[in-house]
Amino acid sequence: MNQKLLLPTNDFVFKKIFSENTEVLSDFLQAVLDLPAEEYQGLTVVDPNLEREYIEDKLGVLDVKVHTKSGKVIDVEVQVKSQRSIWKRMAFYTAKMLVEQVKSGDKYQQINRVISILIADFIMIKENDVYHNRFRLYDERTQARFPDSMEIDVLEIPKLRETDGTPLGNWMRFFSATTEEDFMQAAQNNPAITKAWGVIKVLSGDERARALADAREKARMDMDSWLDDARYEGEERGMIKGRQEGRQEGRQEEKQEVARNLLQMNIPLENIVKATGLSLAEVERLAAELTHRH
Image (cartoon, rainbow, N blue to C red):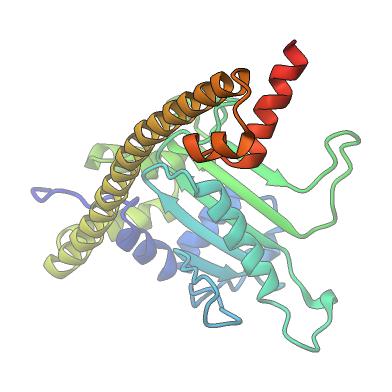
C-alpha cells in the first residue's frame, strides 16, 4: 500500500468505522463492557448531539452514541491529546446522557444506564499501569455499589503491553496501529477488526475521505494551537499582573511604614490618612498593633 494510512484515532475515521458498522461496534463493546450478550443484538447508532433544554445550555457532541437492546445509552470517544478539563467533560457528557432521558411528566423508572468509553492516546491515570479502568459509583468505605446508573470506562493506549492477547488487547493494538503490519497483527483471528482494517484501507485510498480526515486533523491541531496560545497569553498576563501586584504590595508596605512612623510621632490619625492614602481603618489597625507591641 503506497499511500499513507489514515489512523483510527482520527475522529472522522473513527466515526466511519464504528457508526456505519454495528457488527464492528458490537465486537468492540463486548471486549470493553460486562453487559449480557443479548444487549449487543440490534445496536442502534443515534444522533451524537446531546440535547439542550435551554438555548444557553452547553452543547455536547459525542463521537459515537449508541442504544443497546434494552435502551442503555453508550458514548464511545477517542482523544489523542490530553486536556486539563477531560475528566470534567467526561462527567458532564455522562450526566447529560442520563438527564436527557427524562422530560417533564416522565417517570424516573424509565431512566436507563449510561456508559461513556474514552479511548485515550495518552496517560490519564497515574495511579496504576492498567490500560482499562472502569469507574462506577460506590462507597469506598463499605464497597457497596450504587444501583445501576452511570459508568465511565477509560482505555489508555500507551499502557498496552505487547503480550496482551485478549480481545480488548487486540482492539487497543488496532487503535495504536500506524502501519499495515500493525493492523494485520491486530486483526489476527478477529473478523471484526479485519473489517475495521478494511475500512481503513478503503478510506486511505479515497481522495475525498483523505481530505475530510486531513481537515479534521488540521482543525484539531489548530484548536490545540489556539489553546496553547491562549494559555501562553494567560501566563504572560499572569506574570505581568504578578509583577504589578508585587509593586503594589511594595507601595502598600511603604505606606504602612510611613504611617507607623507618623503614629510614633503622635500625628493625628486624620492627617496620617491624608499623608499616606491609607484608609482610616487601616491606620487604626496599625495604631493598635503599635500599642500592643508597647
